Image (cartoon, rainbow, N blue to C red; front, side):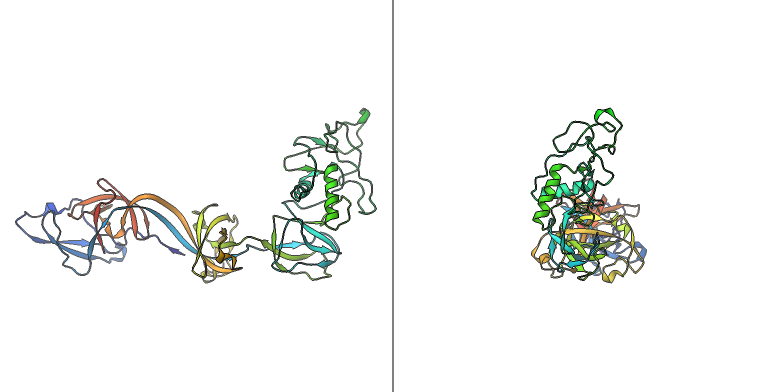
Length: 446
């Protein structure tokens, strides 16, 4: 890790706040006044001296050639603290794709291709398994009208996004009852997951799904149907219109038009994916690991020590230095919440030696031409932890460490002005104090 911070004791000169040229001898006399200047940290004992010759209100020339002095103007500027860490440009961490149903693999994609919503990711027994976007995969057979849950929402949302008319959906809070499904010789699905039965009593809501309070049945007799389920936020219902949309999509995708979807019939992924590597071969069993996929967007992964990650947050801007010396702007997309052990040292992108703890910071990168030409590359990432805008600042060499504590700057006439220090960055230090304003001239080392 490198840092642009500069400590306050790097180039300070120790003086008393009461020292001024006017407090010296009379106007008719001249003498040399030796002033000690601290040029290094006190702990190192590296001290220098500057000799000044002059009269009240006027400085002379240095007689000690070991240090030279100059003047600098107080400026109003932006200061920031930053650190640069090693990272890797790529497509993010690969994730494994496993098949979800028995059969044999009959087709696999090529490494490097992008697969989007509705497109086949692989084939089992020559039947395509298409990509749907979502967070909940199919965990049961969807066949019974009235089936409710987040897996139904996955189907409904994707068919809607693909342009199929899925009809109206019952609103959150509606009570629906799952209907029986007669056995379909073409699908091998009989009945409904969770039980068979007719529709519960209650008025239809226009979706092909019966609605009403649970426990009610026609004629007031004891219910013979499964208990009604209330639609929760995040759920959708398998209505007659949605089943019809499934059949239309199956026909277009080259599947048997049954209106039934089972476990493993869809590959549910967070979004479009890039095939990173193919592990399976043709004629392998389809219920194992088939391939690895990544995001389609370029990103940078950086291993960060937990202590350093405290100053980083999602949405912060960073600068990525690419191998061809160009730079690209990036944004912190995520910071892992689990600490891992590093596998390598700092030389290969780690934060330390093997066994050191680290977090992974993921960064999205702007779409520059330099990034488009690279699939993977080592990069340097500059993180800015704090920024101070529009502050008064001087070179660090203008600071004088006072013997009674604190700091001061010296005006060209010799007078010392106590100041408060703020951020140190890139050889500059933020200051404030009475009589200090933009353009004020101060003495500094050169």
